[in-house]
Length: 150
Image 1 (tube, helix red, strand yellow):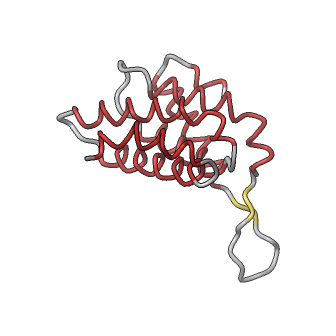
Image 2 (cartoon, helix red, strand yellow):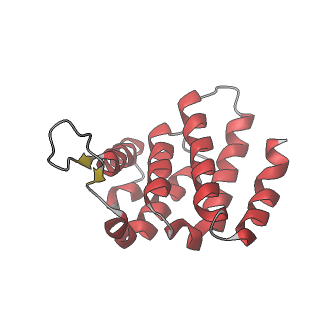
């Protein structure tokens, strides 16, 4: 997580990719023929580092000097997906950064389809995890993203 603070694009890109891969790892239940479905890093472990992790990722996305980084956006998607209720506390800050990323991506002449895909997946996951638990966030979400998605 500390490497997400690096000013070197290569370092924070590899850090985001490594974190995403770790979050996507599953442990088998031990029964032959079953698919692994228990995450190596669970919700409780992720809660410990969630703030530092999401802050580091959003700092990268919010920097207009860095290009669209699909690995960082995929890590945001995976983090929000695995975090359970944690994104609720930071929903407005996360939405604001994703909104800025959406605005920048829509203005670029050079499109990065993977980045755009992970950006929209991140928005969808955040809406699902936050708005279903708190209706007040649904109104906020509509106000933020509604005009951009028309």
